[in-house]
Length: 423
Picture 1 (cartoon, one colour):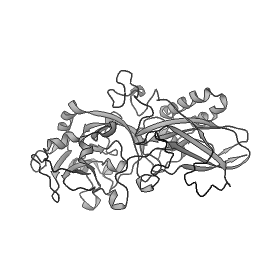
Picture 2: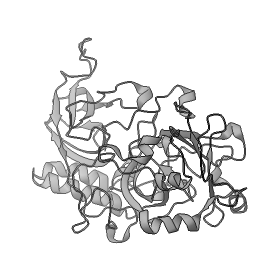
Picture 3: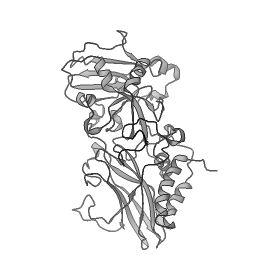
Picture 4: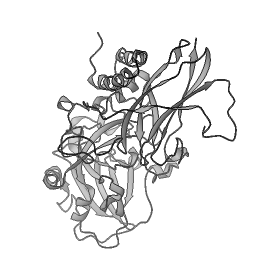
C-alpha cells in the first residue's frame, strides 16, 4: 500500500482546485501525482528522480529527512559518532562559538570571545539572546551548481550582528569570515564571508543573516548543520555554513570563500527559475497537456511561469539563444497552501514570522522572494509527433529565464527541457 504523503497531497489539492475550474481533462495530472509511489527513500538525493522530486517539492515545506545534502568533509561531520560530536562541540551542550580578529588583517576588538579566555559563546547564551532577538523566516536552500534545490524550510535564529556587536569591534571592520567544524583538518575547512554592511543591515527588505538553531520548528539536526549554522537569506547554500565554530572579524576587503577558490561567483544572489513536477513524456493525440510544477523565486521575484512545445526537428534561429520566439504559453501560479507541511502540527506556521501577517498567518506578498511557489496549467492538444518541451520563469522585472544572469558560475538556471512524444 502506498505510504500516505500529506505534503504531496497538498500540492495535488492546490492543483486539483485549479484544474476543476477548467473541466475534468486536467485532473489527469493530479491523478498521476497521487499514484506516484515513492520507492525506498533516497533521503536527500542531489539528483532526485521525478517521483523523489515530486515528494521533496510537492508540498511547500520539505521534511528534514527529504532535504538534499551537499555536506563536505572526510568523514562528513554529521556522520561522526555521537561521542566525537560531543567532544568537538557539535552538540547543544558542548557547542561554543569563538569571535576573533583576523591575525593577518586585524580588527581592533575590545571583547574578543575565545575558549582560551573562557568567554566563547555557548548555547545557553545563544538562547538568552533568542529571548529578545529571535526571528524566523521561510527560505529555499539551493546549491549554486545544481539544477534542483535542496529543499524549502522555515529557519529560526538570532541576527548574526547581535554576536558581532558583543565583540565590540572598532571602525576598521570590513568583512566577517566564518567557518565550521571540519575534522580538525585545515585542508577540510569550508569557509565563507560577508561584507559587514550586510551583516549589520537588512538591505531591500531582506530578512537578517542569522545564527540558525531551528529548522521547521525543531532543533537543527546534525545533518542540517546543527547545533548552529549560518543562514544567509538571499544567497546560495555555500554562504550558509554548517556546524559553525568561528567568526573572524577582518579588515580584509575581499571574500575568502572556499567556493571562490574553485572559480565560482560568490557574491550573486539566488536566481529565479521554474521546473515541472507532473508533465507527460508520452500522450495521445487530441489530449490536452495537464502540467504542474514549482518555481524558485530568486532575488528578482516571480511574475510568470511559461511552457513551450515545438516540433523536435525544428531548427531554432541562431540569433535567438534565449528562446524569445518560442511558442510560450502562460501557466497559473497557485495560491499559498493551507497546509504548509514540513512536520508542523496541522500544517500551520508559528507566528510571528517575517513576511507574514501575524493575525491571519498569511504571507504579506505572494509569491515570496527567496522561496518556492507552485504552478499548474494546460497546454493545448497536439498532433502526433515528437516535440521539445521547455519550461521557464519570468521575474518581476520581465526577465525571462535564464536572463538576467545566464552565466552558470553565478547559479544554475538552464531551462528545463525534454522530449514529448504524441501518438
